[in-house]
Image 1 (cartoon, rainbow, N blue to C red):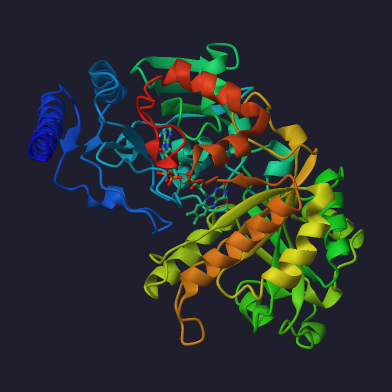
Image 2 (cartoon, rainbow, N blue to C red):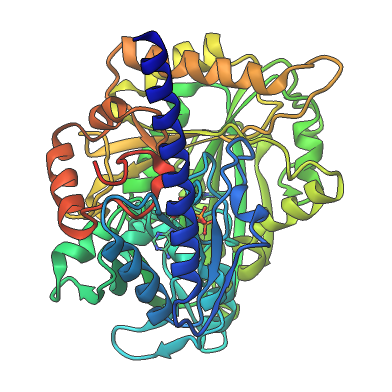
Length: 515
Ligand code: FAD
């Protein structure tokens, strides 16, 4: 009996191995034969198993470089027709600036959306100006193209070397969000390839369920091949201003005042600084200090400081008005006067400001390091409790990267999109943008940052702060369920409708193929 059982087991294992091999070989050969305008590469795949987070590495079977939307549709239709027995999944990859492998597809197909990038951008300058762009287009290219017509998108991210499809799958937020809403509130139309390989044009009026599902939908319902982005007349220059507070209450009250005041700035953000040495001398390289006598006496060392960062846009002939408005708004605030820093920079330089840091970090080999980032949306009523524990106890310093913090008003968001937000009308983004770089003082930087992040999340959970992750990342479906809360059932229904086999965006680990 024992021998018989052993022989059966060996036979079973052999059959399974043969089946897996046949399956992979079959898959491989069938996708090789697809009639594509672009390329399917099985050799140059290593970059598609990496991302900015630099912590998750899953290699795909192949990378597709589509020339057209039909290439994407052909690939997905083919995999859809293979049914649930095939393991193949598909991840759209924009610029690969995900943090936790969200644009990766283990042994699946990664679609390099940037190969669609070259498709011509079409600008419509009218009552409702817009630009039609490819889903793989970088925001920096859109900016340069629109400026040729004196126009620009209204809502941005802090960093522009990201693709349209990548940010619209999340939300796309920055200091303009309080006024214009996130990037997903500034889209007029999309062209989407669903998980069945159908190419669908959608907007508020046409196939609106798909339109709102895809916006903030973490790539789960379709691949954005084209987007129509709202534009406004572009400014030319920017007054870029920073000032500091020692008192957290005053800092948040004044940030909240600024996002709701009638006369206010065009961009409002802020950050938290703890135990940073030489902060103000760093700023002096970019900014002109407003009060050169006093600022030299202000020391940032050993303190927890709160900075408001704002910007006022203007055209060349509007400089006097801009100066007056800035002076008026600043006169309403009670920051530490000797810490007012002002710079006047071209609009493009302001929007592309993070790229200058990227160049510096790259030259020191500090860009391609692990980035264990944590982005949280915190309800306004809980921000004091959060700050007291997190900035007061858990966070020792901000030497491993900036900690952004600014309020956002929900009225500019559309609740038909898929993004999950806290329940209150105003909530804060708090973003811990850490880089894990070992030093003699900190020989296990990554582990320390991950442990700090875990403590922050555990605190939020145990005190029931109603916090939601932005750019969310979870390991289990239970955690995803908790993240979506009352929106979960609707999210699952939409998945069953648009991507029933769970072919798309496997890197988020929300659904498993065929389940
Ligand atoms: P990828 O990493 O390539 O993809 C991200 C996700 O979107 C994946 O799930 C992928 O499958 C999916 N996806 C990609 N393209 C498409 C498509 N065409 N259709 C459907 N799904 C698609 N975010 C902000 O909101 N505000 C910021 O200020 C901000 N600053 C950042 C600064 C830096 C330095 C970095 C690295 C990230 C920043 N982010 C910010 C986060 C960023 O918006 C997201 O990580 C975004 O997804 C990255 O875009 P990407 O083109 O690199 O996308």
